[in-house]
Image 1 (tube, one colour):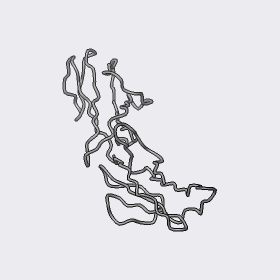
Image 2: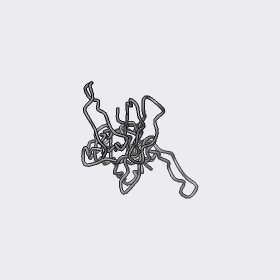
Image 3: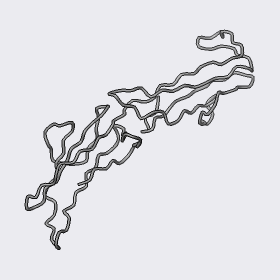
Length: 178
């Protein structure tokens, strides 16, 4: 039997997945001396609980999860239990806008301000660690005045006029900030 993941995933020194990722266990009875009787059943457990009959599933609890599994053939040969370590990240990154340099003055409306042309804006994002794991920030994007979002790569300079900047971050398993 082999475990694989289908959907949102990121592999580093850990295998990160999202809560939307399907856990797939494929089993086959190998042919030995021209004989194979077929797989009778596949069982799995999460974090050492009771073994259950396998059907495709997702992991909803964030953090490190251990999925153990094995298969049995029709003459009751039992495979050695295998274990896969998966790290579930179900939390979107958090981003903030920072004002750099230039001059600013409070605006008339709440949440607004005036800024000189020398003012730049930096977007900072972090992927919160929940359950000892976070896949990390993949990208930040922003839009000026409702325009098409662009990938943020460096502090933003704006021209004269009124600007409304919207921004969001996405992590490496596609959790996106709202």
